Length: 205
Image (cartoon, rainbow, N blue to C red; front, side, top):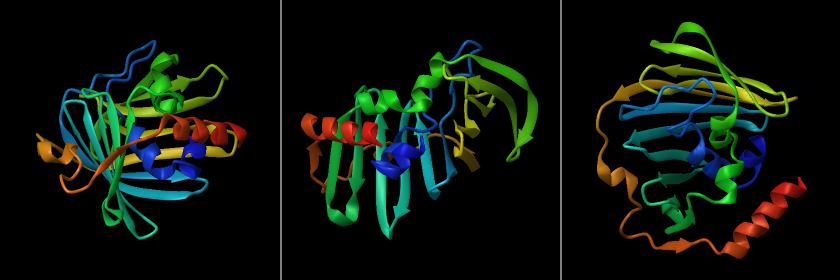
């Protein structure tokens, strides 16, 4: 997971993390509510502070990286991800169901065995804590509300650990405009050859 933070890096990671609809051997609750929240991702490479919005499976993540605003929009209903850099007046579109997406542990977790460990209160939310075990034997944990919001997630391999937590959770419908790129920013589809090159670079690390 931290590999994605170093490469496509924080933007693509945040675009995919904590997306709705995850399920395992002992299913996580399905996301049944729309909401916004503050999000903090803690990694060995540093912290990423962002704002996230969810509505009907759509997701938007906003963050500041190196003084520049970056926005990711995930649209499973349109099978695409759009990464927007407003200050550069550019946006890149990539397919939702591509190799980069599937490499992300947050998507693969649906196939991992999970075990409910009990009830807790976290960030003022009543949650169930789950243990998640991946095929390599690594163990992580997720704290999920009854209406499917991931409030916290911990996982990784060895010293490469990631902690994701959400706070200031505000339930309610979100503005549909949040899930569309700005009309005045041109959107370029990512070249498949470029995507493949990124994958090769990531695998070489």
